[in-house]
Picture 1 (tube, rainbow, N blue to C red):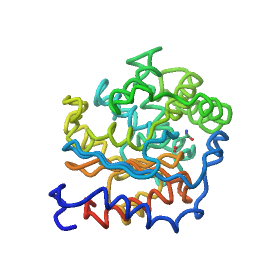
Picture 2: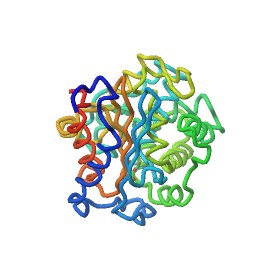
Picture 3: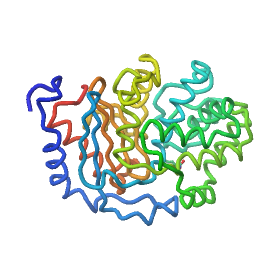
Length: 314
Ligand code: GLU
C-alpha cells in the first residue's frame, strides 16, 4: 500500500478480506437498535462492506448484497433531491452547523426558533422532506424510492412495510418535532403527513452494494459514472460532503473524524456510507451500535480500511 492517488496500487479485494477478519473481536460489544421494534429482530453478527470506485470497479465482502434498513442514510437521498430541485431555498429553512445534541432532540429546536441546526438531525430531515414534498406532492414516496432505484441500478429497492409500520406506531418524539416545526411555520405541510412520509423514507431497504453505487456521485463531483449524468453540481456534492463531515454521524463527528477521517452518513440500522472524494464510495453494514448510534463494527471496519489504504482525506 503506497500511493493512494493511484487506485490501481492497492488490492482492495485483499484489503476487504483483511478488514473482515480483523474486525471479529468487535462483535458483541455494541447493541442492535431496539427503539424501533422491527429493527430488534436483525441478527447482530451481520457484516458487509462494498466499495464502488469512480473508475467503475467494485469490491465487496461478507453480507454486502443483503438488504437492510438504511434509516437515516435516506436523509442523503432527500437532501440530494431537495438541493437539485429547489436549490438554495433549503438553506433558508435549515442550518449547516453540527448540533452537539442528540439527533432527535427538541430542546435546541425550541431555543433556535424552529430552524434545525443541519439537514441530518431529525428536525432538519423533516424540513428537507417538506421541501421535497412541495415539489413532488402525492408522488413523493415514489419519487424517493425511484431515485434510490435509479442511482443504485437496483429496481427491486423498496420500502420495508413492517419497519415503516413499526416506526410510525412508536414515533412519538418525531411527532413532537414535526409539530414543533409546524408551530414555528418551518414546515408547510401537515405534521402527520410529513411524519408518515419520514418514517417511510427511513424504511428503505438497501444493501451495501446498492448504497456504494447510489452515493458514488458524491465522490465524483456530482456525476454518476454509470449513468454518465450529472446528478448534482460539483458545488452541491462538495456541500453535502462537508455536511456529512461535520454532522453525518450523530454527535460523534469529532471522534469519527479522528478515527476515520472521511465524510460519512450513518443510520441506526447499522449502515454507514463514507465518501473518498475523487476516488470511491464505501458502504458498510453491521447492526450493533455504539453509544452514539453508529455501527460499532462498521466504524472499526472503516478505520481499518483507511489505515490499510491511506485513503483518509485528513
Ligand atoms: N427513523 C429513525 C428516527 O427518526 C432514524 C434514525 C437514524 O437512523 O438516525 O428515529
